[in-house]
Length: 123
Image (cartoon, one colour):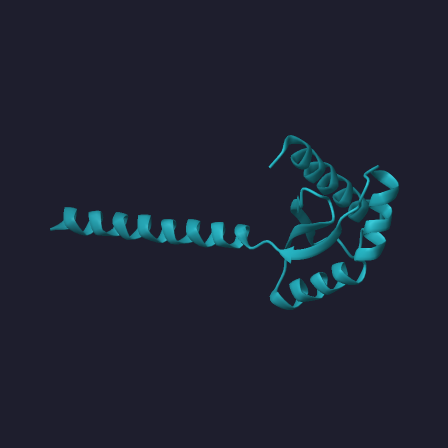
């Protein structure tokens, strides 16, 4: 991935987060833009979002993002000067949930090891 593409990714992520924070405060309170990946030709891109809440809220927020995607693209076009403004696909980023699950499993293993070591000392 080129340096320009990386810079465009970061710029779009920052501006899209700003749009959500300033113009859609109530609707976007549970949404975090975790990453953006645009194609090298800037015709399409993926926006990775994390939603705090249950599965129903997550599905609702993804539908909301997809419904307002044209408005976001228009506002990004006003803020960022690019030859082509990518058409975005909004995808759920589950890396945080996976990371939390891994930490939970590691804590359970550590707890079992502590209880196992305490049982050996008693004998």
